[in-house]
Amino acid sequence: MKDGVLIGIDAGTSVIKSIAFTTKGEQIASAAIPNRYQTLPDGGAEQDMARTWADTAATLKQLSEKVPNLKDRLIAISVTGQGDGMWLIDKAGEPVAPAWLWLDARAAAITEAFVASADYPAHYKRTGTGVNACQMSMQLAWMTRNRPDILARATTGFHCKDWLYFNLTGDRRTDPSEANFTFGQYATRTYAPDVLDVLGASDAKSLLPEIVEGTQAAGRLTPEAASLTGLKPGTPITLGYVDVLCTGLGGGLYDPKGETGCTIVGSTGMHMKIAPSAAHVKLNAELSGYTMCFPVPGMYAQIQSNMASTLNIDWLLDLGLDVLASQGVERTRADLLKGLDERIMKAEPARALFHPYISQAGERGPMMEPSARAMFTGLELGMGFADMMRAVFEGLCFASRDCYSAMGEIPREVRVTGGAARSHALRVILASVLKAPVRAVQREEAGAAGAAMMAAVQQKLYPDMDACVAEWVTPLLGASTEPDPSLARRYDGAFGIYKETREKMRPLWREMVANRAS
View (tube, helix red, strand yellow):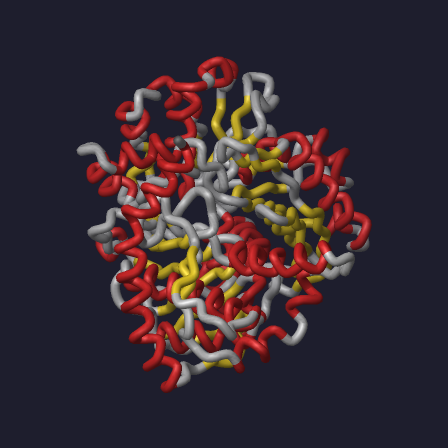
């Protein structure tokens, strides 16, 4: 179809988006609705499942009104979304409880005990992935021990994108990426949910849905979903991989030789490299990180992630907004960001260190430490807001180097995407910390694009992902930001202090968390 359209849905933590693309990867139109979730005093982070679907359907409806004759031009829809968490439904397809998000920390104690147990190394070897309190396995264990009444009503355990795919198609499915890094065996791309036996949650195995490969199979839009969205019943629907992989795919991660890295500077910081085969996967002594099936036959993405990335920037911005509001001055984050890049670059580098562990769930990459907390080290009189924000930016870049180092050598080039990738200051600091060129991808909606690329391959618009990447991604790679030699030398010394500080703080973080709990 000459004027055919592909839609990528990206249901993130902050925003739910539906983006329309041409078959050549050009963005036509977008629709977005802010996402909403609730944090609880006990460390919970929950989201209304019915509202999430309603908001997603509304974005598709908006697209159908923006793009002329969309329902007849539409070739396929693909859906991705925020990873980890637990979205439980009953036999009738109704939610049995609010969704638990990746921000949920209620299973932290169970996670810490499992990581310290004799069973953990075998689990890590199977999955190639370190466990965290936000993973469904740990959350199911918590639910088994604390809310068995909810589990008794559940028949299927989804992740966010799986729940949306179910509402679009009526099919209970999951994708190879989330199925394997949580419950599987990465080398064979099959389930091996032994972790649930070890955690005393064996009955929860029945909740795991069938695994489907989105580049090969598609469901069909149901009449009910078509009525809500203004689209045609029977439209092909593909199930994308988890949002981090779709964002990596749309953001330039794919490299058959595995020499290119991709960093996503979003709510979470994700740092990725391709392993061309299972034999190329390199596990680490910390037993941390992720090994995820990649939507190319035989390939994997190795990932280390720091739990909170731009959440640290938002936190510091919000401190400023709170002070202004207390004096009757109303401003927005965008107001405070104006001119901040220039002020950051004028501040002295590495004057103070910041460890960006602002999430209550602690840290998962490259160290597994649920008790980790954010901190400034080296603050002095005379330091101002820009100095502190520079330390935050540098902390995020040190976290990136920390993560890449756990996966072997730093990539020869790193593609960077996510909202903060637009910052020139961040790109310069990141390149200098990594001592590697950094290139931003000139595509704002990399996650939705990656999902749509999977649909393009599934629909045979391209013979393989190589051909799709050549048209959808390569032309959009931005200019290279080179390392600053003087900054690189300064950051080399500071990085050693950064690592030593976090190691020495681990027992103190644990004492702080225990003291607060008591």
